[in-house]
Length: 147
Image 1 (tube, rainbow, N blue to C red):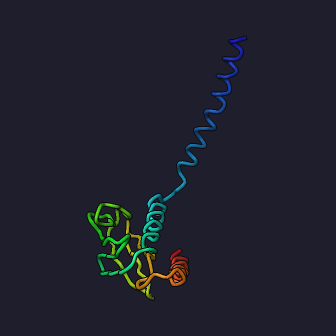
Image 2: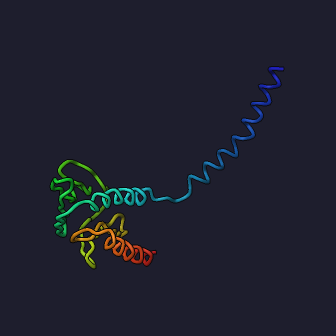
Image 3: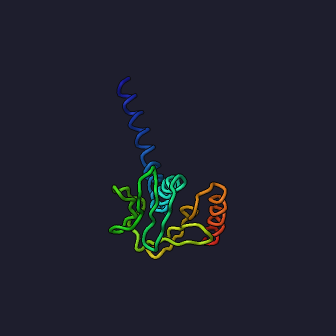
């Protein structure tokens, strides 16, 4: 009786194994860019900080602001976008990064592997949720044109 159970179990494993290998190969070939998903998650965290920050001061290569009564600077260090003081890393492995002001909104612009990205961070002066949503709407319209 044990021999029959063992043989039945072995038969099931041998039958399922080729299907599992084919499924693994199929799902392994689906192209997916993890860095883009990671970028969006990190930028969303940064947007949350920017929503409650004030006294924004931006230049081409840095963005300074007051958050929780402390001054912080967001800038590029060794191909990483870092919030200082400290070393909170938001973007990595990019070729170039800078900040731009368009329509009263601050954008972070970066390139990686020949692909250029522009993502909104905040409203430049006096962050208001209504104003931010207007900028976010423009950002969504702009990004829909990239595809």
